[in-house]
Image (cartoon, rainbow, N blue to C red; front, side, top):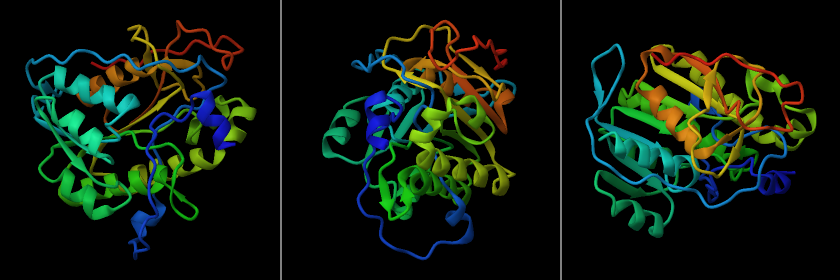
Length: 296
């Protein structure tokens, strides 16, 4: 089933994880699970990801707060939406710490001004904590359905580690990228699509639930994209509180919305679906139109 999902383009970040060392977890970590790939129907085929050119501008400021996020930790920043988020943050003048798994990714990202690329496995908690130390916000796009340990996916273990490290380090701003099909959006997903993705969606949903339940003092936002398409941004995608929203969205638009959400006080403790109403989707058979969430 996951093989089908990979070819359908639902699994976004190809984060493969080696066998996670069996360690004694605290109760919070055992509940965690989640983050990044889209659950909508058979959407457009993948093409090469178009990345925006890096520019330098003023720091990323939080609307209505006046505080800037000067250094943002990004998990899953080597490809897909995570890589585009890195580019977008850099274009806003924000420094990035990216945790990646390969030497090639370290070399590629280290060549960009403003990026500190650290090689490591997100399934190892200490690696995540060490990489995040010194950052003032965190974004995790980890996903892909790879098993970090028997019965536990990187969608669970990796995101668990990011969320827990943020709590330990006092990084109170966290954005978790999961998928339509998690939690309250389960009913929005066509049954045949949910059946293919249910194991990973369940893992992502656990991470959402722990973030919501245990990190009440954290300024978190959960973003659930629809079916991901690798095309240039349309600029028409929206965030919405409509849990029944369904459809497709370009990866570049997801990255743009995530960075905007990061800098918006209005998104604190919000769960938002991300879709592009201008893209026809076989998943949205009823032609549902969702109200856009106001970011400012």
